[in-house]
Each structure stands twice: as structure tokens, then as C-alpha cells.
Amino acid sequence: MSMGIPFEWQIGWRHVRGGGASSSGNRFIAFISRVSMLGIALGVAALIVVLSVVNGFQVEVRDRMLGLVPHLTLMQRGGSFADWRAVAALAQTDPAVRAAAPAVVVEALLGHGDSLRGAVLRGIDPALEPAVSPVVQAMDPALLAQLQAGSQQILLGQQLAKALGVKVGDRVVVVRPGKGSLSANGPSLIPLRVAGTFAAGHYEFDNTLALLHLQDAAGLIGLEGPNAVHLQLQQALDAPRLAARLQGQLGWAVAVRDWTQVNRNWFESVQLQRRMLALILTLIVAVAAFNLVSTLVMTVTDKRAQIAILRTLGASPASVMAIFVVQGLLSGLIGTVGGVALGLLIANHLDKLVPALEQLVGSKLLSPSVYLIDHMPSLPLASDVLPVAGISLLLSLLATLYPSWRASRLRPAEALRSE
Image (cartoon, rainbow, N blue to C red; front, side, top):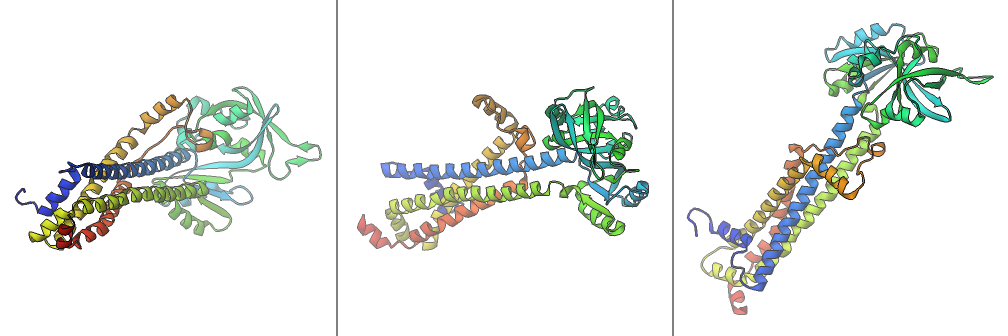
């Protein structure tokens, strides 16, 4: 034996390597041991990949959502702001606020021919909106410049334009919303010209959002000015704190809503799914780890004579127990390290693996109409990988306790007499 290394570690490592597996029984035990390590590796890898996909999915959708959803929205209840600039100035006293822009937000029906679709009409100031909306900022300035006051022109999300069957230059009609939208002669229809389309990168907005000039949108519902003020913050995570402060300052007349309240149900459902997937896959890792129990029990049974000889040579029950704890822990460590490496390898190359799989099966795995994005994002985080590795090693340790305790209780005389 090597000098300096406790004999418990040397024997335990020899068992892991399958040393001395000359008989068919020993070879079978070595095979089962490798299957246990492979099971742990696959379980750990699956858990890392799934958590990375959920992280990437959440961040991707959130970032795309924040391309058009302002960090904070101040809505005047029942009318328009008498002085939106004063409200914006109040908000901008906080250094967390980077920019403010007025808006008119209203739900309406858009029609073209036989098609009729629900839409969210957002009246914007083309000069100020780019400061609070990355998607608008990225638009062609020439396209945005067509939204002039009184021009009665509108920009449609690409999916909305496709659903209505319109192209640039076509006319759509707006069923005038709000009070007085229905008259004795039927609904009030307001024609608008399609000046262009835009892609928000988020299916829900591409399918429902339409942009027009602030004054044109206000005229649709009989307002004298904006009914909303959009705020862009230095850090999006400051939104809940600032929302609470502004709500207290502005009172009930103004509804303050931060971006985390938009699609709140979606974010909560993602978190719930993440926890459930983590639990299910942890159970898979647990099953693989507890396969070590059967491996170690078979090893103890097969090594009864060797254990008895060690005891007669002066090895204590604690040393015998340590041998099998070391064997189980090393098996778990090899499986865990292999699983972490495999999981990170897959998670970091999903952008290449998923298209190859889609091409192989001839079908798209992610429909943007269902999943909001059209590719498989992945974001492995140390805050996920380290707990997964720790849980795997802990389960491996727990799996060694009973077999190693059983080995330590073996009586040398009885073991040698039965041989």
C-alpha cells in the first residue's frame, strides 16, 4: 500500500475501480457499480440542463418583454393627466429613474375586411418614446417619423398584421373604444393607414400591440392628453421599490404598476414549474444514488472473508465502515463530477444541439405562439450547479450508511467459518 494514504481510502478506491474482479460475481458487482455511477451522472446532467433551460427561458422572455413593457407605468384613473410633465418630474427626483415619456394606452378592436382582432393601441411621442422603449429605439427612424400628429397612421406588430392580412399602405379600422363607442347608428369606425410593421421579439406583443401618435390615440377616446406616463429605470429590479414610493406620493387617482406585475401569472407559473421539475429530477438522482445501496450490500456480502481477515489483523469496526463509506462517496463523486461536466457541456451547446435535433425529427420543438420564443435558451448558473452537486453527494453519503454499518458489524469468526 502507498505510504501516507489511509488503507481505508486505498481499499475503497480499489473497490470502485473493480480491482480483484476476477470471478463472475465480482465482475457483476463492478458492472452494477458503474451503472450506479452512470445513473447519478445522467440524473445530475438532466437536472443541470433543465434548470439552465428554465433560467434561460425566463431571462429571454423577461428581456424581450422589457423591450416594450416600461419598467414603471403611471396610469391616470378615469381620464388624462392635467400635467404629465409634473408627474414625470416628481418621479425623476429619484436617481433610479433614467427617462420618462407620455403615452395613451387603450384596448380596441382592429378590423380589415372580414378579419377583426383585439389589440392594445399605444399612443406615443416619437421623440420621447425611444428613451423608455428599447424596441422603439431600435426602429428605423424613417418609419417612426411617419407617426405624425393628425396623420392617422399606425404601426402594427408583425403577427397582428399577418392575422389581419394587411400590408404597408392598407387601411385598418378601429372600433372606437370607451364611452360613446356605440351610437344609435352602430359602432363608430375610425380608419387608419398602416405605415409599417415592427417585431418586438415577443409573440404576445407582436400579436396584439399597435403604435400610433399620442394625439391620434387620445382623439380616439376623447382625451385631451396622455393617460399614462412610462418610466425607464437604471435598474429594472428597482421598480417595485419605486412603485411603492410613488403610489404613496401620487395617491389613489394614479395607478402605479411595475413590470413585475405584467404577466405576473406567467412568471409565477415558471417559478412553480422550475421547483416541480427540480424536485422530480432530484428524485431521479436519489434513485440513482440509492442504487449504491444494492451495490455496497453485494460488495459487503462478496467481501465477507476479506473483511474478517482485516478484523483479525486489527482493523476496527470504524475502519471497516470507513472503507465502504469511501467506496460509496467516491462512486458518488465520480458520478456527480461526470454529471456536472456532461450537464454543462449540453447546456452550453443547446443552441447547436436543438436545431440539429429539429432537423433530424423534421419538426420544430418550440412554437413561438405557445412558448413566446422560437429557440431553446440556456443559462447555467453556479447557484444551480453547486446545490445540485451538493445534493448528489449528500444522497450518495446517505446511501452508504446502512451497508457500511452492516459491514462493521460482521463477526470475523462467523464469516471465516462460513467460507
